[in-house]
Image (cartoon, rainbow, N blue to C red; front, top):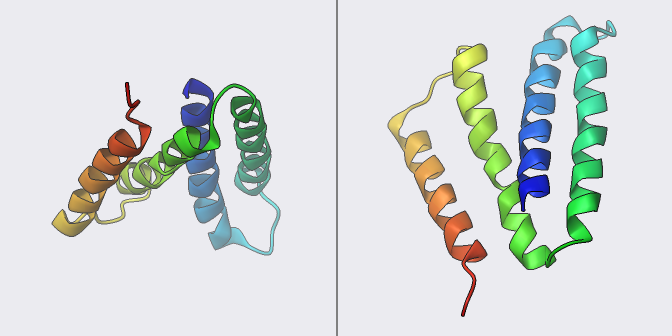
Length: 104
């Protein structure tokens, strides 16, 4: 699960880099190249994590990338974080926790 959480964080940073680089398109920038490279790194983390656990347990962890993107966009890009989005973040966390819960 740690590798899948790393994949989620890496993909979130990649999305933020691509968003910031989109303002300079069609120029190729370090943000664009870095974002694409981090997507590859995130994919590698996903592939490695699939070897060690069930997909149905791992994939909900990838949903946390939406949380990291929302918080990163608020922090670094100045995007709004209204109450409804905060509620969505809380529900996502609850959903990931429920889906990842191990039945004994």
